Structures are given as structure tokens and as C-alpha cells.
Length: 178
Image (cartoon, rainbow, N blue to C red; front, side, top):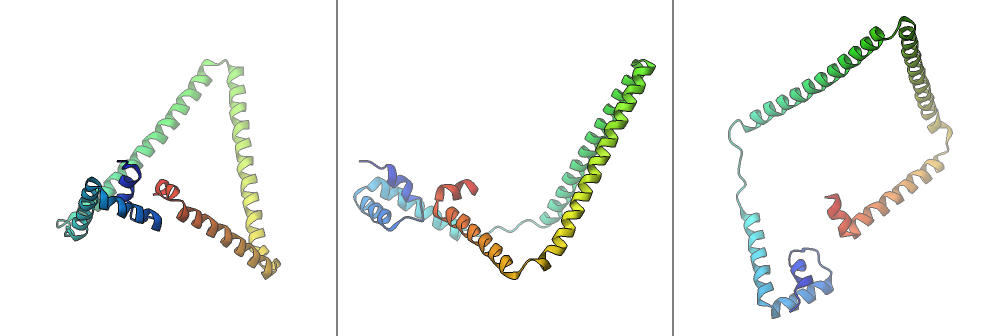
């Protein structure tokens, strides 16, 4: 007897009506699958009726202390990594400056200086761009008619609904997301 779809359906709580009828008919004829279904129902009943264990006294305090300790360790590790990167760059720069001739050392310094200036200019442009966006966003809501905002909100809501329905309708996507 072919048990392939039924073995999966036994554990699925959300079956289509046709699948449920086929499963019930198969369970009536197949004692092995019926035993699996009965065992599954008993296991679910035991899980639902099991007493909820309460944590030991002081568990929350110990857990918070442990979490704080882990966070401190992570911060110390980040500081150590940043410090080692800084020291490595300082050592490499020093070696380059010492080993290079006087003229080459000056060229390296000029190169590093021009790179830092370029980086500074890039950050300045970024800040100017972000400030202009902030200005546009502070002025824009008062300049655009309400009907346009309603259209944009409705459009966004429509696409959010399509997305939610696609997750709800396709169980394989829901299992991947869970």
C-alpha cells in the first residue's frame, strides 16, 4: 500500500478538505497509519497537558548576569580587534616611513594625507546630501496634495497585502521564513 502522501498529512494540521477526506479513508483502511496518527495525537495531548516548569529561584538574575558578562566580553573583543588593527597600521606606517628613503617617505606621507583629505571630502558630501534629503523631507509633506499621499499609501498597502497573502497561501515559503 502506498503511504507516501498520508504519512506527511498525518502530521499536518492544516489540510485541504479533499486531503482530509482521503486521509480519513486511508486511516480507516490502514492500521499502521492509524497507529501513527494515534501516537501523534497522544504526543500532542501530552505536550499540551504537561505542567509548565517554573525556573529556579534566582534564575533570572543569573541569566541577566550571564548576558551582561557576554556583552562585556564581546565589547572587549571588539576593542581588542580595533586596537590591534590600529597598532598594525601604525607599525606598517612606521616601517614604510623608516625603510623608505627620505624622498619616498615624503611621498608616502603626501599620499596618506591626500587619501585622508579625499575621505574627509567624501564625508562632507555625504553630510550635505543627507541634510538636503532631510530638508526635502521636511518640506515635501506640505507641498504634495493629500490625494497623492493617499495614492502612495494605498499602493504600499496593496503590495503589503499581496506579500502577506503570498506567505499565507504558500506553505513552503512560510516554513522557510519560520
